[in-house]
Length: 414
Image 1 (tube, rainbow, N blue to C red):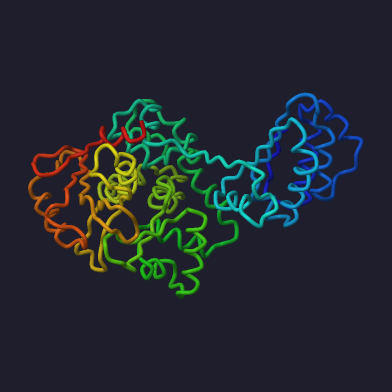
Image 2 (image 1 turned 45 degrees about the horizontal axis):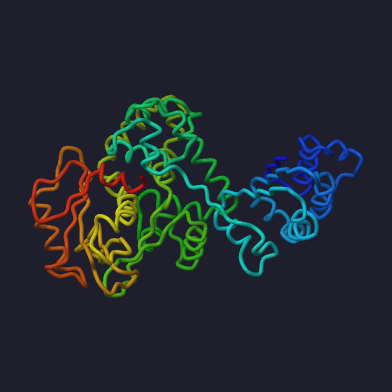
């Protein structure tokens, strides 16, 4: 039996649930027609339990669980009662699904009715290596495809095998119904059905603002209290990540970024230009992406590459590297792309310092090395003996630094 909540009223969800039970493949589902329409979730789940087989396995799936919890505060208690009294004693696999990760995790926390009754399983998007395998792309192009798609299968399914990002974008931006367009709006509508202020803050971050002051200004001049509440909502839902500089000294220079690469791309290029695409001028949007792509990609890929380095730490980085971050000051002098350390947010030991140069046909050269050496001298906790890293898309032409390219980094997920 598979039921999907629609996010409407409690009554509509109850009616839909009863209808799905009646039309399911459960052996006694036809008996549901003999009962009155349930008016509470306690009654609806008792109805379900009454038609579940006792001698053969069955599967019950409740999709979009966060909708049910928001619409009826008694739902969790009713589910716990049904599980403890009947469902746990039957050969039934109960699967509860929701895309709101923070809310789904809360359902299984101490003090909530369903605490310790379920086993959590997070189904992540495809990683860069899986994206490359699915599309038949070399490592560098696989990272590009990941930055656009976020690893979402719905987008990747319409991506022509072997096509680079420009080949896909040329096709996708011609169709207003492309998954590249509709997925972003559906995500925003589902996550923020009523929180217009949080959506404005998210849009400001998506347009490139990273500091508290600039985000508030770009979001319409929000006062500090309102901005703080919106940022707390966004970070609690894991849509936005708050980061602080990694060094041996404490810092309050917090920066914010959108966690999902696809949503970052959508808010930067697609969302503000949806009407242009609907008028059949996707070529203008494609031109805008081309103009901004080198600088946008250079910033967007940083968190993905840090994740790869963290996964490779045991094999390719100095011993004791347990966290990978970055370092910056209020004036961005210096701004260091990669900092390896033994712990965060305040390290005891800095294990590596590195730079990311993710441009075509521009390898990491002696000028980049000189700049990195200067930045290392300005990093609290680093000294002349701290190893140097060069993460470069187009190779490295200088000595004195450990180089990692796209092929090395994609192996982090293999």
